[in-house]
Image (cartoon, rainbow, N blue to C red; front, side, top):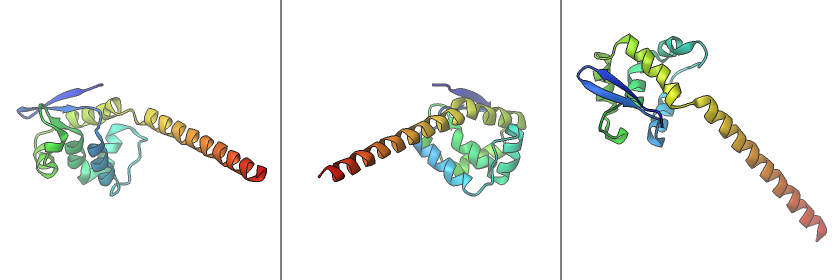
Length: 133
C-alpha cells in the first residue's frame, strides 16, 4: 500500500489509498466540477479551481490521525495558506500513484463484463428450463 508524506507548514501530512469515506467526499466534490484527466496535473489543479483546497483536504490526512477525524472546511482553509504550488502538483501527481484509477476502472469494467456474462448465462438457463417444462 503506497503512502506519500509531505511537510506542510509545521505538520506532516500523508496521502494513502483512499478509504470509502474519502471516495464519497471526493465524488461529492467532483459533481460540482467539470474535470478532465487529460492534460496533466497542472490542468487538473486549474480545473478544480476554488475546489482545490477542499480536494487537498480530502486526500491529505495529518500524520497519526484518521481521515474520519478531519474537519474538511478547517483543513482546506489551513492548507490554502500553507501549501506551496510545487507541493500541490506533487500531491495531485501522487494521487494517481496511491489510487491507480485506470487500473481500477479496468478491473471494474472486467467485473461488469463478468456480471453481464453471468446474467446472460442465467437468462439462457432460465429460458431453457421454461421451454423444457
